[in-house]
Image 1 (cartoon, one colour):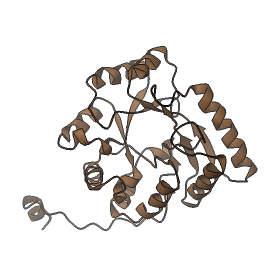
Image 2 (cartoon, rainbow, N blue to C red):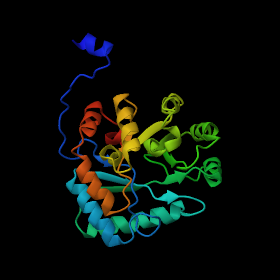
Image 3 (cartoon, helix red, strand yellow):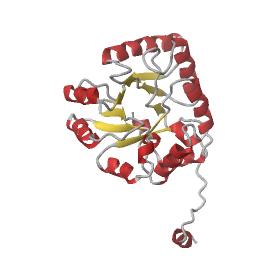
Image 4 (spheres, rainbow, N blue to C red):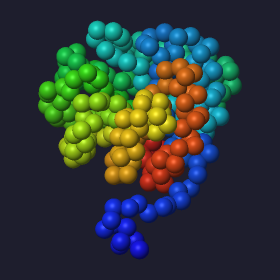
Length: 250
């Protein structure tokens, strides 16, 4: 029967273990929790409220990643790490037992290439560099920049690849990235349809083809937390949990 299903293209029904929370991932490595420095959390009170809810969902560690974008959010390591210190103090004062670190989500622009060459970068775990590209147009020189990141001794992580419409009909591009040493970070809420049906479709295909290295909440506010609570019921998430990801190693 298994052979016939492969011949006729039918999928076997597999009962993946149902997950109740995100403790199997343990670490959220993409969020915007430092208040007031990008389009994420606006106040310390909002950040604390979100972090309490992360804890309830089973997370033991959060690596928050503010935007660094030359034409919108000109954050620096000093700004981000200073904000992290304040956030850690507030979390400690509230008695929330959760580990907090900070890196950055770099926007693919000319300033990004300069920062790579100058090695003025905030990394995840000292070895990963999280970056995003425009939602409008695919960057022409992405292969060169990926190479530059690797020459700098870092491993590039492409943020939410399922959200870039220009690659929806070129799925082989995702395979090419991974073959070139780029790791892929899925936005967890894509599995619940938060970013639309096409992003959900691509996200599920990435899981089916074993292409997801990390997941991240991309938390900007309570709307994303509410969606994260709903997404835990998605069978595609259960399948990803069964496959395993790199988050617990961070």
